[in-house]
Image (tube, rainbow, N blue to C red; front, side, top):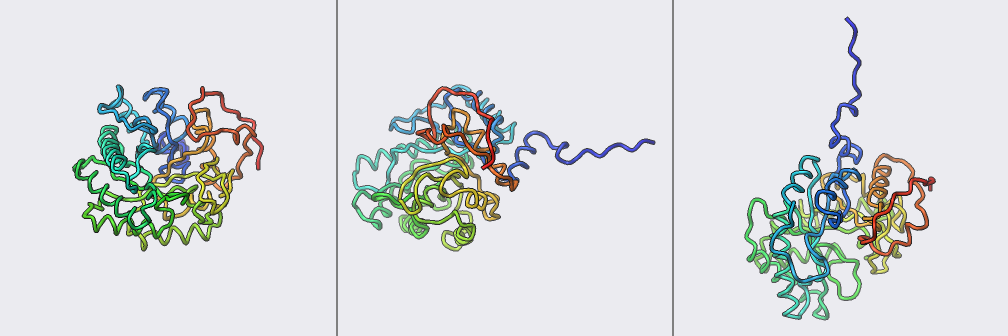
Length: 344
């Protein structure tokens, strides 16, 4: 009887399993523009090889929030589930700030975060990411107390349910009166929240790597990455790191500036990005790219760079045009990707 040839394990995988294997088993994906429509956006997530996605559920630079989900949301959720792409994170409006003294602004921020949580539940998202904010002259301690009271108000308005997403507070780069640029700040925010009777089981953190760099954490050094990540659970408690924003940085170390760059092509560089992508502490933490040119083909190119780093390969050199993109989430007309790259 002829012997049946053995099919390599990789060939026996379905497409979703191959995408996950190519990312070292990690859940990683881009901030996904929804402008092309929900159905096309879900297919784009598949094309770029995403295993997780982040989206805006509404205009990130406006206060007004939609009360009803967009048409096609059920099909969008079903398609992502069929592709095994998740968890989904919703990035809240950039306008919100719970740390300042202005009462009208503070109340608007509470309304907006509550609306983001409700809409995120309809999207099937597991996480809502929001910037910590700025104390606007109140001082660090008072800003944190103001933040904690605001979080209590948000959770009072949006009762806990089995499908309600968690809220992930994002570290800052430290500019101006920003709160939350140091790990000590994040620990103090948790303490302030507990004192204000916030249900802290609904609360965690998002670390943005470009913000860490701007705040002075030299994460281009794998030893610094290891020390930072191994110190998280002792500082914040197990399970508090809910998500990662995986961005390289244009800005100098300690500049207090937030300037995102393509993966491995910025100041953090190849060694730092590879250390973050392969560190065992982050194996179960979903990561989301907010790198430049997401809707003009660079979503796929940056995801390809992530896969190469995980596999231990050299990165291709990006064309000069890649460094002239002004925004991490541009609204330009999509253009064909350029495949002529040379190793760096």
